[in-house]
Each structure stands twice: as C-alpha cells, then as structure tokens.
Length: 277
Picture 1 (cartoon, rainbow, N blue to C red):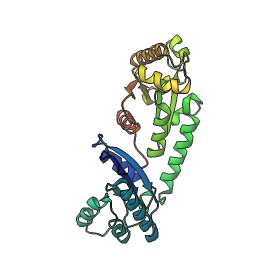
Picture 2 (picture 1 turned 30 degrees about the vertical axis):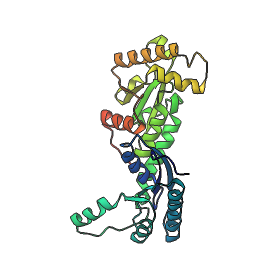
Picture 3 (picture 1 turned 120 degrees about the vertical axis):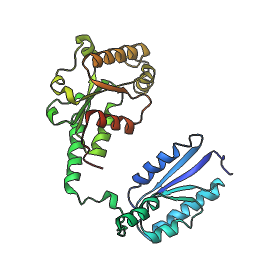
C-alpha cells in the first residue's frame, strides 16, 4: 500500500561513516517539518557491488512507498556516483556543488579519496580527541575535581539539564576537554558554587532548563519522586539561575536548543579554540 504523501524514505549514502551526509541532509530536511521522514544510513559504500546494493534498497523503498525516495550522497568516486544516479530516488550529491567550483578556483583536480574526511593521517589531532573524551568521561557529573585546570570548559547546572551530552559532544566533535558539575540541594542550602569551581570561574558555563521540561525528563528516570516533582524542579531551576547570575556565570537555556547549538554558543562565549573536526 502506498504511504502518505507526507511520509518519505530518506537515504544517506556515503563511502565513509555517513555522518557528513546525515548531518548535511538533516540541515536541509528541517526546512520541511510538515513531512515525516524514515531515515536509512548506508555507510562504507567503497566498491561497485555496494553501490549496486544501495541502489536496490532505494528502488525497493520506491516500490514499497509508491513515492520516490530522497537520497543524500557524499560519494566521491565518479563511477559509483553514476551507479547511484541510476536509482529511482531523487539523488542529491552534496559534494558536487562544491568540488567542481573549488577545482576551478584552485586550478587542481580533487583527489577523489574515499573516506578522506575520516582519514587519521593527523595522528596528533586524533590523539588529542581521544584524550579529550577520556578527560570528559572522568570528569562527568562532578566525579573528580582533579586536573580541572586542564579543562577547556566546565559546565554546571541542575541534574538532567543537558550537561553530559553537551560535554561529550564538545569532546568528540572538537577535541575539547569538558567537565561538568551538577548543582545539588546542598549547594543551594549553602548558596555557593561547589568548592572546586571558583578558581576556574573563567571556564564556567551554565545550563538551565524550563522546570516543566525538566520534570518530564526526570519522570522518565524516577517517576513519581520528589526529584521529578514540578515543585522541586521549579525550586532547583530558580535557585540555580539565581546563583549563576550572582556569580556572573554565563548561561543559557537548553530547553529548545540542540546539542550543536549549545556547543556552538559555549565555544563562542568562552572563546575556545576548536581543535578537531
């Protein structure tokens, strides 16, 4: 049975992990929020047989849905690209718009290297990223105050305000050493920052969240608890914001922002040098 015209299959086809195709594709698809997209990532298409298999999956979806699938691709090999363009999907080549003009401007041909974006030839950058991830995991949720002077940024906020996913994103995407500290009832009773943080005030950045949203998130973890009650969430959020204002800690609300938006704001506000891409 054909699917609704507001439901479409979307394929992200890449010779690498597919992250680039998916990220760029998502940026475009957000402009069409009236549609519901069923997403399929097809990574590591690095030989003709895999390209042909991808075409078969796209064609099967076309027959099943009764609609042409949308295909975002970052394949760099011309022959495999030609195979993909023979599918029954709308093929959007995300590299084609940039490579040809750059070849003309730089007066050289592109290398057409498969998986070049994820090439680990820069060993130092890779090592820095791994060190940043290890640092961030060791300094998650206030586990350790040792070595905070090495941190690029220290996030603070109430429990479940988005600190952990943001610090991990900063570490994995940009190679930044990011720690995070929860603001807990004891901090509000003392009305002071956690004792390990004042020496690193210039590295502090706060996250807050609407109490109603916080209560929803906490109810998923501890349903019907004081921790998740709306009254308690309102108290903690109000106390945290009051403390951050008094201590001149820069902060933003994570309620309606993506991890990418939060990370970009933090980097801009604290003037962090991004090391990895």
